[in-house]
Amino acid sequence: MAAPENKLKQALGAGEVQIGIWLAFGSAAVAEQAAGCGFDWCLVDSEHSPNDPAQAIGQLRALGDRTQAVMRVPVGEDWVIKRALDLGVQSLMVPMVETAAQAEAAVRAMRYPPEGVRGMGPTQARATRYGLVEDYVSTANAQICCIVQVESAAALAAAPEIAALEGVDCVFIGPADLSADMGYPGQADHPAVEAAIAEALPAIEAAGAAPGILAFDAETSARYLSYGARFLGVGADVTSLRDALRGLATQTRQIIGVR
Image (tube, rainbow, N blue to C red):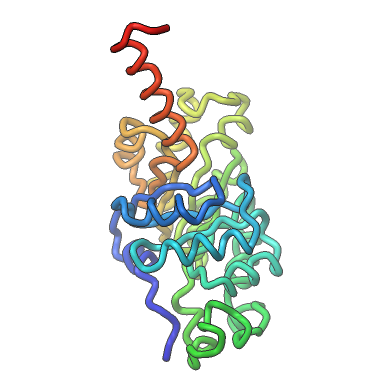
């Protein structure tokens, strides 16, 4: 039995647009609900959210095969990447990648030797169904989707070089950190930031990787798509619930006349 086919990797390689959502609550119940809502992928965030491996594995089980699971690791260290892959994730996002050398190191960390440096521990890992996927080690490398996140002006300048690396499937722009690095914290829609994004997305595509980015409303999503984004984050569980609850409270008070 071989490693499962990575449908997200295939879709991105075929030039398809894939939309998804961030999971930041650390809740398997929320992940289970999100899995059935029509997203191509759901990302378990371990960088800015309280998701340790034990919480992450519960969410991965909840996602099942109804959507493609992605995990953002907190840092691109080899041992962190290895643990995430052993949980059964086939698509990993590595934050704060600044150079092609860092991206190449992430690619190698995600692959077994001789193509990489991923440590062996297949019989103990959920990724192999605890040893039942007998051909996992020989087939896993081909199914890994490597998503590197560029979040500064310097990283954006290096994005085409990063995108050209063999093994990098997607280069994902982080607008929040990018805007802060460019001197406009909290202003991801600043014209200078917007111009940089509009230039970088097609350059990433031309270099050979799928361009990705995060947006939090439909208008911004449409604009980023027009620039060439194909791996598109369209929101998060935390912000979606916040907006829904705030809207419910406001609408109810207006209708019943209570402040």
